[in-house]
Image (cartoon, rainbow, N blue to C red; front, top):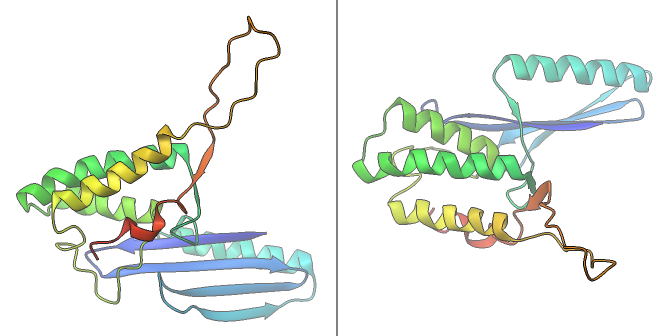
Length: 185
């Protein structure tokens, strides 16, 4: 049993993660800033059941503070709905960057986007400069869209008259686009 949570608040310069894993009677917790070395604490408990109970209590505590589930690496897997939502958020962020209008809707969209696409932004988040130009946004949107247009392998039809159906994958890997995704930072 494991979980990876993030807390992002660009205004408060917060881009943190918290992760936990239960193995036998141990609960290992890691935390820190996204992209930086984690701090680790191992809770040694009497048995697996107690470790699971502590896990659930700590997860509830973190979620109560505003943490949400995410993926531990930029190049990890994301669901298709998450990719679509990330593209929608980039569409919200784009006009704000174009007009240099960094109001509440921009901040809200940026915070949500950074929860989906975990990003090492350094020790000081300058939300005015996460995206310097609309070209940076367009580049990321193009990369995310490319993941949606990659179709899943199709199974050959048994009979010639049977049409092939396109099956959309449930998750996609960001590994193919991660190398240059944040090239402008």
